[in-house]
Length: 387
Image (cartoon, rainbow, N blue to C red; front, side):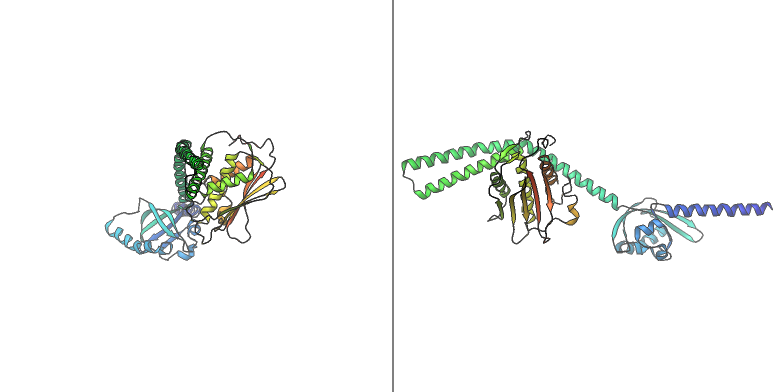
């Protein structure tokens, strides 16, 4: 009777142990797979089904090659044979990152740890698999953020140098302008210089004046000073922004154009910040059309009720649908150049002026159109104190 009781207890203990093992096996977050010496799958848990897209019935008794890319599959059997013959461990008891293959053919990274067990039926290998895709995405984002921070450090240094460089350039440029004005004045008074040569000198004088104005605007953009609202002529703002956006164009003829509705009221805004928005939009558009056979970038300004609408449109490839949602968030830009802050800062400036900046839908699915709206008569509470 006692022996029968002990047998019942042993059977009950074994059943409980099997139930516990089965529960752990099927509720584990990581994939667990068991194979024999020939690479045939003996066990395959629920996490593996989610990870690879195969159900257990699809793989049990089949070679584990089905969840491996071809190059891994070719080497796997040889590796197992080498280990059995030599005992040389590559993964067993160590673990490392490898590639796996989903049922749909997608190849993705996993972390694989392998243990082994001697059984009456021969050696068996237990693999624990962890999906590394989410970790890889985080690592990529962190690497990009680090690169952006390093770039911002360089920008900070350039910011300190920018005003000084513009100041240093302004001095010799002013001297050149004074010399040209002196020669032009003396030539006109004497009447001895060839008219064509005098015309060339006068053109050089105008170009020097224009260069001086550009340098002055560059100084305004890089100088650190509190925002200051002024009464701005819209046409003057547009013209200065077009000139700044043309810098470094490298094209034989311009493809940037502008149109301003006649009779627009003056704008009450910080001139440096508004130019910063428009120049950023124009230069983004210029980059967007770089690969187009016929390039078009247009800045238009019109009045809509109490709002001035500045619209920058281009005929580039447009903004990919997957980027639209995060377009105005910092560090989410798709460009390889820059730090991904331009549009985020531009929208912040627009909103602090009582307006907004948004991407407009385009009917022909070609190109992009950004709309900057600014109130003609901004409310007092819409200040720039938070910038």
